[in-house]
Amino acid sequence: MKVRTLSMVAALVAASLNVAKADTLRMECAPTGAGKEFCDYVKDRFETQTGHTLEFIEFPPSSDEKLGLFQQLFAARDGNAVDLFQADTVWVGLLDRHTLDLTEQVAELEADFFPGAWQNNIVNGRVKAVPAFLDSGALYYRQDLLEKYGEQPPASWEELTRIATRIQEGERAAGHRNFWGLVFQGKSYEGLTCNALEWVASHGGGDFVDSDGQVTIDNARAARALDMAAGWVGTIAPQGALGYMEEEARAVFQNGGALFMRNWPYAYVLAQADNSPVKGKVGVMPLPSGADGESVAALGGWQWSVSAYSKNPEAAVALLKIVSDAEAQKKALQLVGVAPSRVALYEDPEVLAMAPYLAEFRDIFANARPRPATQTRGQYARVSNAIYNATYNVLSGRSSGEQAVADLQSRLERIKGKDWR
Image (cartoon, rainbow, N blue to C red; front, side, top):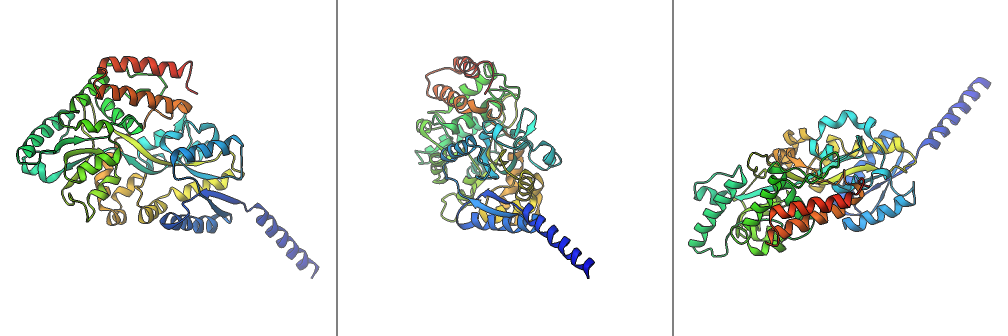
């Protein structure tokens, strides 16, 4: 009897120790709707698999406000604030010292994700985040008009310019007087940095700042790429494109006013909606290549990061692996509609049944290239500001491409100083 009692006491002590080890983790989550439903799914899996408890925290929907709040929380080294959160693609370098080094824990996952998205999350050789969902630039086109004029989707920017010129002239002669060959994001803001990266990198002009942190923009190919884009404004693209962001470009294209459009994947779903004037007439493809270059799309999307101040980093990594695995990404697509970051899901029958259009985006995402944010760390906002202002000056005719890249080289080197910080 005494032995049995001692055994029972030992079992109770062990159980109490296990309970004591159970932690409450906090994860970023949308407060209502499909986002909350996805988080509840994650909560059920995490608590069942680990024995820990998961709570949710809401952050502001505005990226700028959200980043500001993160910086406040991390400055206070608050280990209770949040364990797992989503970082914008361009925040990974900026938040480097506040996020957990995941290199050893996720090394085996690298081959499962699109390479550009994975590379974006490496800071000084260390993996600091895992891709949550993807976004990247794409070229939309009117299938019906290309067929009408006997043209094929353009493989190069030169072909795009020729086709856009021809079909714009033809449509205007047929009475569509406000028809344009191309619309894109030409306003002086972050979206223009993305467009500029695509133009320059696709011509072999580099990424403004290379992976080692060296400024590389002052070269002839980069200058030609910017001059090419400037040549579109007022010819195949409206002068008003200098004020366009994503929605202004989409409105022109979706209302039937343009042949080609550079935009993000969200525009495909809207263009094919029942109330869209161009429903059933729209194709999407990777952006064209430059002369002797390649197709390049600016990488967007969000990344899962673990706070460096988490009180249970092991459990936080377990949570990270749950939210980023194939099952969770399929659930996020089903509930929230976000594009998966795992390559194999673009050939998954269940995924393609839910979202057939994603088959069109595999090659687009494969060409996605990060903006120079990770390597420029806390200086990226100033870097991007310099890029989009220099690009805008070329588009608006205030500067030549040659002068702009030379000035931009000097400006970025001044921002860098001795090193990016």
